[in-house]
Length: 218
Image (spheres, rainbow, N blue to C red):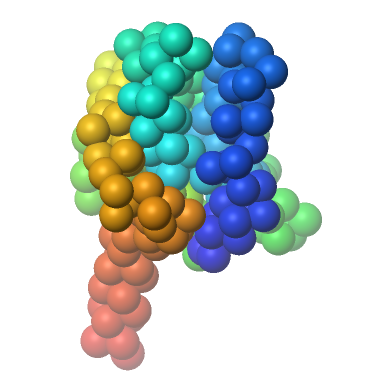
């Protein structure tokens, strides 16, 4: 779970994105689009910094709307998130059984994380597609689980679109309105890491609850 935090620190997104912005406004849109698409669409890469990246670009858009337009960001990244989950759903539908049982792939797709996603999906039903957007790791594995369970594609897409755009609007909006508050700006890297850690709390709760249930069953 800490991989997301480590990657966010190594990549130094708070300095990398402005550097790309200085080179090309179009390039920064493409770069962010690809990260969001890969994080949500490639089941073996659930640890890319999605929440913190959206918060960051929201705050940068508030400073430089000529380079980063917040409306265009929401539209572009909402589409990236929707397409990413759509791809993930298809991967789960076509290869879910093989990937989840193969010893080779289990080294990457952790059975523990997959189990958490399956429990979450069973408990929340279709609404898990929407709620899962706001939880790292779970965000990537829930559409994979939905595809593997043969959830009707039309139902999936409704919650996928609603969840994808809601997640993007919330994170970018938070960055746009609060990312340049002096105390936030002064500790921006720490704030981004805190966002990642806070977003992992629901996963911790699910893990703890499952542990307690298993203990009681013994």
